[in-house]
Image (cartoon, rainbow, N blue to C red):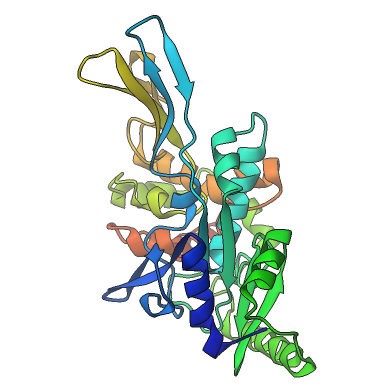
Amino acid sequence: MIAKTKLADLVSFLALCGKVVGPVPLGHGQFKFAEVRSLAEMALDYIPTILPPKKYFMPQYETLLRYDGADGQQMQAVVEVEELVLFGVHTCDLAGIQCLNVVFSDRPRDLHYMIRKNHITLIGLECSDYCDSYASCAMLRNHLPKGGYDLFFSELSDGYFVDIKTQKGEQLVEESGLFEPVSDAAREQLQELRRAKKQIFRSEVPIRYQDIPRLFDETFDSDVWTRIGEKCLSCGNCTNVCPTCYCFDVMDEPDLDLTRGRRIRVWDSCQHETFAKVAGDESFREQRSDRKRHRFNRKFRYPMKRYKRMFCTGCGRCSRSCMAKIDLKETLGALMEERG
């Protein structure tokens, strides 16, 4: 447990030790993860940030190596890393980070990602109120904590119940000296919080979790894909804001002397026209409808076969950011209606 009156002291303690990142208000009901020095800078009651915390695990622009051809061919691998604490991460985003962990630890392991991950301390924060109409975390079973953190905070009447998951989290608790043992009353309050959430967080789409992958299998040739393909702008907003999208391109950036430069990894999107284009100007997914179908199947169907988990966390970011107003829950409903 940690008293609410001591939460500001904890953030100040973390900031003295290194970089702290938390949810920061931007106005107009929008939030972002950014560096903070105090609790007052953060908004702990927030809907999902514009970009998920994956930007700290997999930066949008990341240097992989530097090269120097002035005298032979000199190459040096680079890992751009820093110690940081991610504070106030919701369960949907923790689930997204777990998905990335699964992908990048799969063979061949991505050492850049794995090294960076080990330098990040994750402090989760439980949602106790309904998010907004775009969220579907209950449908995807991500409204409750399922691990993937060092510490996890659940707000009670006079403090926060703190679940310690790792040795790193335990060390932080001991060094700060701000925590106290959990009482039986606090444990009962936590159980009451979880019971209340079952009434607040409910799936608005009438489909069982285990039936979702089969829905996409049975509607692969649905007319729904044609209809949303006609609306799609191929802007890539949905993939940029998705906590589990990890497609990237690798390119070289030479200096002006053309002898030195760097090789970088850059976020890419399966929704871009050029993504599936190969030599001869042929494309595996030339139509926008094909690209939309691919993205939805990459969230709900394909990863179940390889990783035994869906890669949609229910955060609602794709629906919030879509300029064409393509809504994930509406798409699921249309597929269910067409299937009958």
